[in-house]
Length: 200
Image (cartoon, rainbow, N blue to C red; front, side):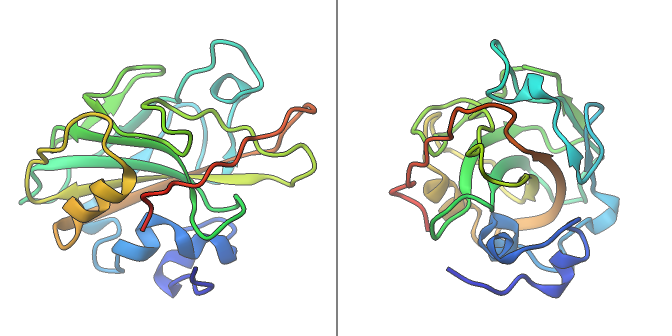
């Protein structure tokens, strides 16, 4: 576990804390890759650094992943990869909520609740959007949506782990963009923390 959040990343995070050093973007990104060529990520459902609606969390039944949209990546991109992590979860790694790849290297979007082309295993070993559900006694958790443009098409099968995806992405990232939503639990249920055994 690192306790050092890179200075370039602190500028992009609304409220950088120690755990943010464990995000994929902190480990695999760099100042020259973040927002390269104007590459950016946003959502019609929340503003960067603001709260996620409960309809995207475990607070509501039939909750789904929020909508996302992004600008075109720089030249050389062959595929887009999305990783969503909670850096405020306990443990030596950011809790993995969503692992998505197979997104075309162009301006695009994921609609609310849309099934992405390929989805890997989250922290609970399920291939789906892991609903934010932090412990009731915790303050707000950050959920950091990280979009990476890479310079080769991935051959990973659906259900691959975050660690497997990291291995394929190593040295292949041409641009990155991030978006942060927050959530603080509103009832008495607790998030089940599970270690990603394959995590880096």
